[in-house]
Length: 537
Image 1: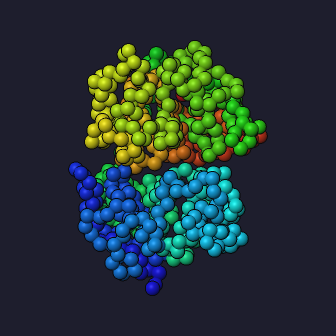
Image 2: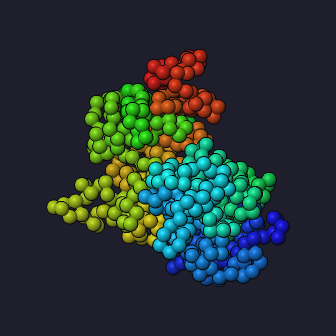
Image 3: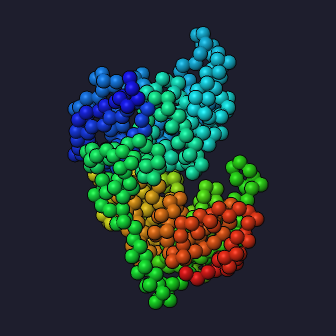
């Protein structure tokens, strides 16, 4: 069979759930040794289509062909037996076992109940060598980084003679360097004739790694483009029927800045941090994670925090909201020194926090939507130890409407919502507290472009109402478009604070890559740290 022949084909696949037509006669084909991108908004049908292909869901109608032969996939085990494997965002690994035990779990070499560990190690080394990965077979999985755990998942798939690998948001938790390593491995899989279906919201990555890109919208296939034909703007337009330029609110930002300039009251500083410092990390107790960080936030301002992985952005905002303990530094709210030792203290001072990992830190996934949104406000909703349920549901309903959270009911379990709607639930629970300051760490991570546009519009509306917003983001276009000022960080320090009017991608990246001991670079531009920390917008 030639490399350009179709390996897998799905024809006229349809799937309905109560009240929802998830897929409507969708066609997909992937060739041997091809990387096929699959993009679309949350709710477009990507997950449903892949769950059918992996045997997790039965389809209502349609046909699947593998190497030209019709197949019926009974369950996930049958899909694996056919050579179809899925690597989800949440890895299916056993943290207390070794790399080699995870790769061959249930298939250990050796007679009867005894394991031939020498052979197990040799087979693992051969698999890892196929991927070009240097990883000790005896390493315990819990001690590995996210990127290394992902390599274990890929090696496990290879050990099962996989022909098609589906990767669901494989880069969502990886650094830039780790993404490049993953891409090298994906290209090696391609060279070995394995087909890869690559699902991601990061369109730049999709364009850089995929041979063809298929777009789903509202459960229908709206087109497939070659990498040469595709652009970000064209993909976005196919996904949502809108131009990419409509997502950011640059004109709104200009009007906000003009409004503040003419209104001394709204231009007041609502938050100041001075000399924030934290020592000790998980891997190095002596390391300085955050060092002497100082900046301020004004009412109605969106203050962006830029930096590469390890720059200390998340660690800084966790100190501000009391999620981690600081070793030094002061926090002022409305000019008054406050002692924030816990998130509860932050709430009392009007500070809300949308964390980086919504599933682990922002939501109770097995609880209803209304319970998640009202959780921080229970003190105001409780009398004599009982929650005023009618009042709770009334308030929750208001925020569901305001944020356009798509849910069949207030009792819907949050786990069943799309990523964008889950993120809106996290934001809604803090808005119910009516915060003066909202800290948002990667507010659009893992959500589709349509949901991103809605989050941007909400942030703009909040800022215009006078809420001060700190936004941590790894997406430079997002920071440049949404921020009034940008705090650049590197190695746990503030290296520059730039006005939106002067910030460029090149300048921001320059300050985000300044190494310790290289501050004269900033001084050459007339930007000493003392000057930058107090620079007026």
